[in-house]
Image (cartoon, rainbow, N blue to C red; front, side, top):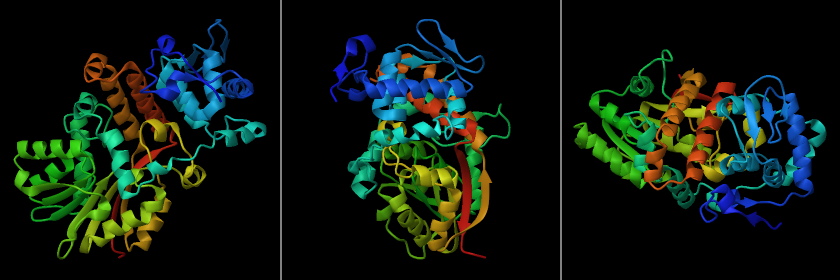
Length: 413
C-alpha cells in the first residue's frame, strides 16, 4: 500500500515518526473502519464532535475528530495502533483524554460488534523478532525507553525518581512519602534490615537500594540501563551509602551467585518487560539466588488472566512506541510460574487506583513543562506521544482493566 507524507501540515518529522507522518490513502479499509468507528462510538458513553459541527452522543467526555479521513485511514491500516498514531498526528483530540480512554478501556471487549470482529485479523501485526527479550533484545528494548534522558524523567517524577506506582493512604498524600511507603512495604515484607544482603533486579534510579542501605543492608542491584546506573550511583553517594550499594550493568540472567545466597530479592515493575517466554527464567533467577528461608518481593502491573491469554501475541501501540517486547502478566500466571520455581505467595496487596493517581500526577507534571521537554531535544510529536501514553495508562487503571500488586514470595510453609 502506498502512503503520502505531509509533514508540513501535520508538523511531524517523517524520519523520526514515519508511520505517524505517513497517511494511508482512503480506500475500502478506511471506509469500513469509519463504519466501525461510528457504530462503536454510538454504543459508548463518549460524545464525538466532527469538523462540520455534527455531534454524536449526549453525555460523557468529548472526542474531537479534526481529520476524519485521516483517522479512518489509520484505523483501517492498523486498528488500535492507528488510533494512537492518529492522536500523535493530531487527527483527533480531547480536553478530557483520560476520560475518553477510560470509557473505551471499560468497554474494550464489546465496542466492536460481533459481526465485525473478523476485521481484526487484518491488523494482526506480529511483534518484531528484534523485540524478543533475549539478552541482546532486552538491552535494546530497555535502551529505547529508559535511556531516553535522565533529565526527561526528572521533569515529571517525584524527587525520589521512582518510576512505578506509589502507595497512597489518601489522594492528598505527599508524592515522595507515598513512593517511600511502597518501597518500605516491600523491604518490610522481605525482612530487609541491618546486615541483610539484598539483590535488586531492576535498579530504576536507585531509591529502593538507597532506602535498603539506610537500614544497614548491603545491596547488589542490576540494570540494563547505563543512564539509570550512572544516576543511581551518584544518588547513592549523595545519600552517604555508596559503600553499601553496588549497581551492576547486567541482565538478570547474568547475575553472579553469592555464597549462601541473598537474604532477600526484590524486583519492582520489572517482570512486565521480561516477556512470557522468559517468565520461567525470571522466576528461577529470583528463587535461585535466595538463601534458604529468604524472601522475594515483587511489584508488578497485572491484567485479568483471560485478558493475558487473549493478548499474549498482540502487538500494540504501547509496544511500538513505549515498551517494546513487554507483556503484562496476571497473578494466577505468576503464581504458577513461581510455584514451579519453588516459591509460594505469602502476602499480596492490590492497589490499582493508586497507580491511576500516580499516573495522573506524572502526566500533570509532564504537561506543565513543555518548554523544558523541548529544550531537551524532544519534539511536539514526542510530547503528544507521551501524553497519550500516560493518559492511556491512567485510563487502564482507572477503568480496572489494569491493576498493580505487591507479592511477597517464599518457600512453602
